[in-house]
Image (cartoon, rainbow, N blue to C red; front, side, top):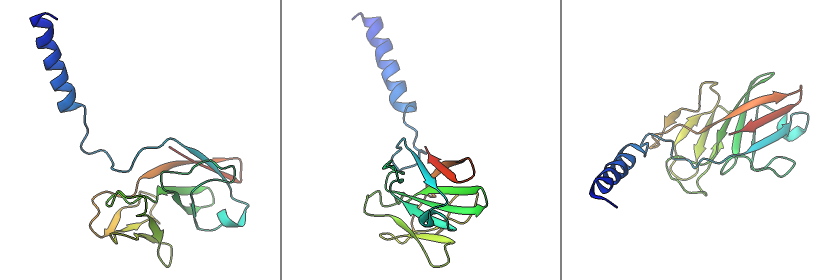
Length: 146
């Protein structure tokens, strides 16, 4: 390698290291998934449900998801993995009333009933719960995906 090529290699490598890492990226691992939920089934028909897999065995999120129904065809879905603790055993669980969910490890509390995101209500967490996309297939099937 010539001196000029080494020089450019060092500059390019440095640029990649400096600008390639996004520090503001959400700390919850990014997993690709698509899960389908038949809303006619009792376990998915309420205002809120949690799932690790759909009825076909497809994974739902990294440590499972919480799905909140805002209206007849309006849903929000969030990762249960706590963005503060970063431990698969640390998951959020809905509190009484189903408006908030709380981490079983750090105690961070999140507002899951908001259609604008599960923001932090209380606790040491710096990030809200990771949101997932939702869409309806027909009248009765909710698809949650990333």
